[in-house]
Image 1 (cartoon, each protein chain N blue to C red):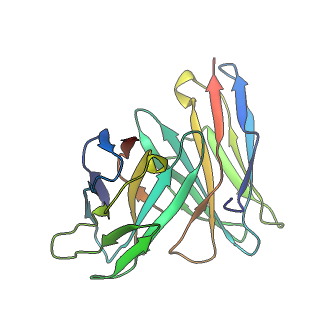
Image 2: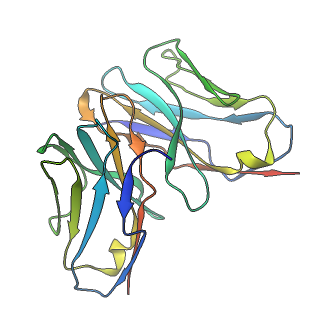
Length: 113
Length: 111
């Protein structure tokens, strides 16, 4: 079955530091890949997506590239802000399992001023 | 604001009781998904409805059921509640299979 593995957290950074959150996946088909963000007390917000190999998703300074050869979709940001503090979830969906999302465990990011 | 609404925001109830969670999808979205978020299980897919029909089931307990009505809103019914059912329940909607938009969630506490 499908699965998503994220780097273990929590991650604590200083403002303006570089962020990488690793995500690898296992899927039977050709999945679409997503990063969602959950701010405290809120629901999940779609941050970015990629639907095929070598696609790069980007939004609000965050980027992730769909790497089929390494089955990865690592999230990066060049300079984090305090307002980026949240939980980040990597997820996939593919047609063989319907359109359900399979999520990773989530990575708590805290950015200190 | 994703455009997906969920009510109630919080729900506190006792073991053995039954509750109903409600979700209104974004305008124009025909698909509704339910997910459970708990500390031990993470985010788990429960069930998917498309235009009133059940399309897929995930790790949904037999004590749980859902439906989608002609106006496309959906309800998740949880019965014979146990302490372990305490969790955040999210609804999401989509117009296609690629992007799902999540509501703010209902936090269920079973005491």
